[in-house]
Image 1 (cartoon, rainbow, N blue to C red):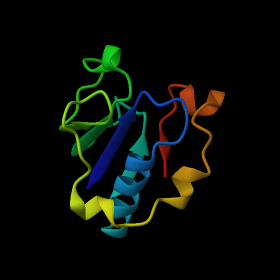
Image 2 (tube, helix red, strand yellow):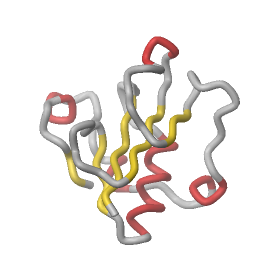
Image 3 (tube, one colour):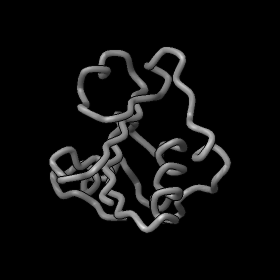
Image 4 (spheres, rainbow, N blue to C red):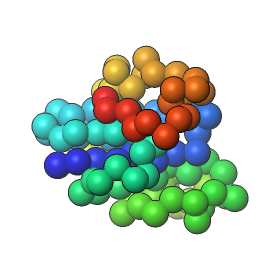
Length: 101
């Protein structure tokens, strides 16, 4: 299964790191901030209210989404160490090049 993780976070996003770890443990391919990446399921973690309509995703959450909580399946898994090592603020991460984790 191909999973796309979208965020407006300028740095690492703990919720997406957990979601990424869970999907990788289940054999899925995970990409971050690649909205044109053909995927089977998209998650969006939105920090700022002004960005609520920015992402088209199957599941949205984050501080900008009222009553948003991380699903229990994801909450108790560790984080994706590969994603943690990526500096989301660097030029490569912000380019149009999707990143496979």
